[in-house]
Length: 203
Image (tube, helix red, strand yellow):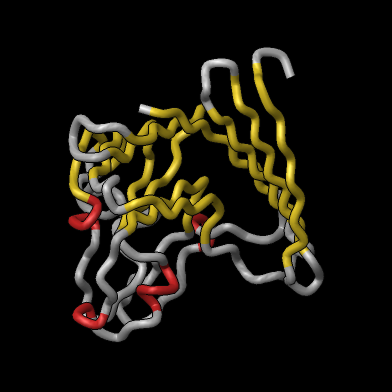
C-alpha cells in the first residue's frame, strides 16, 4: 500500500462452536511504524461474552517502565473507572500488580490515548497509539500464570514484561461483593464483529 514497506495478513480459525475467525493485518510504514489491525468475527451470537479483545506482547523484563496518558494512577476497568482521573502517569511494571489474596486479573488502565513501555524512564522501548481510546495492562506475568497460583508468594520469578493492548476488556461486575454479573453495557457480546487498530513505533 502507499507509504508502506511491507504488508502481511494472517487469518486464524478459532475453535469455538461454531468456529469464529480472526484476521490480523500488519502494515510497516516507511517511517518504521507498525500498524496492526485485528478483525474478529464471532461464529454465533449465542457464544459466551468475550472477556477481552486485543493483543498480548511478551517482552524482555528490561522494559520495566510503563507510561501512559489515560486513567490512573491505580488500576481501573470499564465499570470501575470514575475514581481514576485522566492524566499522564509513569510507573514500574512490577508496581502495576495488585496483590489480591489470590493472584488474578489486575492492573488494567482505561481511556488510554497513548502509552509506552521502556527501559527506565528515558530508555529505549515501544510507543503505542490508537485513533480511539484503548486499554493497556503491563504486568510481570501472563494471565494464565496469575490464574495458576493461589497465593502471591507462589508466583514465579519473572524476567519478562507482559503488555496487553486492548480494544476493550469487559467490566468486573460484583456490585454486591459476592458474584453479581457485569452489567450488560460493560460486556463484549458475541453478536457482532469487532475491529481494533493501533500503531507501534520504536523509541
